[in-house]
Length: 288
Ligand code: AMP
Image (cartoon, rainbow, N blue to C red; front, side, top):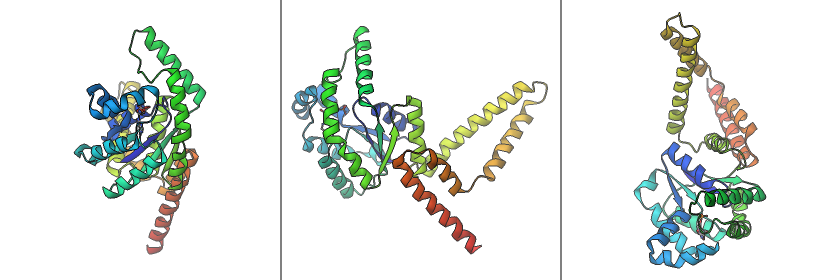
């Protein structure tokens, strides 16, 4: 899976990226993290970037495009990646298109976390105040003052990417103001709806969920019918689950159900998929 996570600073991109990394075994490529590491190590790139970052400005394109290009060549990126904090401008997106074309890599989707800016500022102010109260170190560019500048830069330079990727039919929008868990669930759901989640990964995740569910319902049955043999109850619910899976709804119906809840951006694509699978079913029926 190859994704871009788009959203203003403080929108929870980092948190969601981490969750995707754990779930799908892909790598998170964060230009901010890489630059901070370069600053800490005082490499030539780090020395150049240090002051720009501290003031909330953008590091020159050739630097960030260069570090992303090198990182994409590393073996761990071959299984999939999430770009976090890159691209940040239309020229960077164009440079990325070129890079991916040269490297024969296809982007699956761009996930936009949409948030309310004033709520975002308040969130950061609270977090910074709490960290200071605990005596923890606050990131130099994470103060409300610098954040205001970073938000302005996001609006002016990064937001046009929403249109850029929407035109290329890559954009999926998620409400980033929901609780972290809900945002994660919604991202996973829309990725599955567009087929970005490889069948193997989706099947594995589904099986794990079903096993947990069966075990849970088995345990409940066992608890309820303590006098009856527990194995019988577990086996029956397992069979029932299998039977209902076998009798599963047609793919077109499932796609319809998932697209109903999807945000506008994803609805377009999942609706297209539903149409395609409906056509397949019709063809199969015609053949039979
Ligand atoms: P982040 O952790 O993504 O918020 O990035 C922290 C800082 O690193 C930004 O405020 C920029 O100064 C710099 N930076 C990160 N990614 C980029 C990028 N794609 N283009 C330019 N500057 C970047």
